[in-house]
Image 1 (cartoon, rainbow, N blue to C red):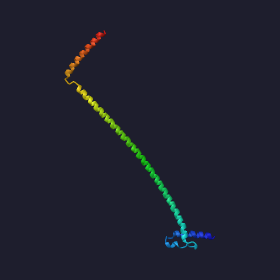
Image 2 (image 1 turned 60 degrees about the horizontal axis):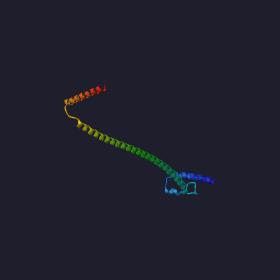
Image 3 (image 1 turned 60 degrees about the vertical axis):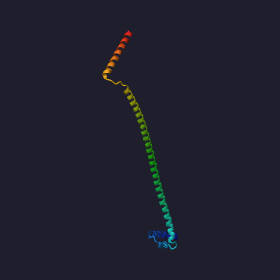
Image 4 (image 1 turned 45 degrees about the horizontal axis):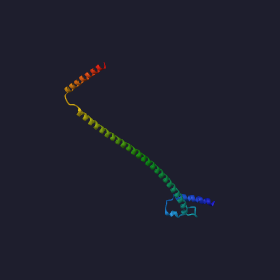
Length: 156
């Protein structure tokens, strides 16, 4: 029975402590109805509760920090993947440009060769008047016609 009244006194004393303003004088006073245990002993119990609450808050803070860290790591991983893909695209574009430049150089060299051939052929052309050319063609045509007649005669 004495233990029950002690427990009730402790609970009512805790309520008084929690509702009192925090001042240094009340820390040494005894809880009303409990002449045996000073408040200082009761505060030790409250400090333990406070430490447990602080530990829970720290654990929650740790868990939140861990989640934030994982989010940041995932974001970093995503950014690194994006950088890798971008670097690959840049490499492909540079390779394409290099191929195009080589093809352009090849076409340019081919064009120079073709132009040189055209210039050489141009120098080989006989310059003159069309009447001279027509006369030459008529003479060659007359020789060709004679050769065909001779071949027909031989074959008959």
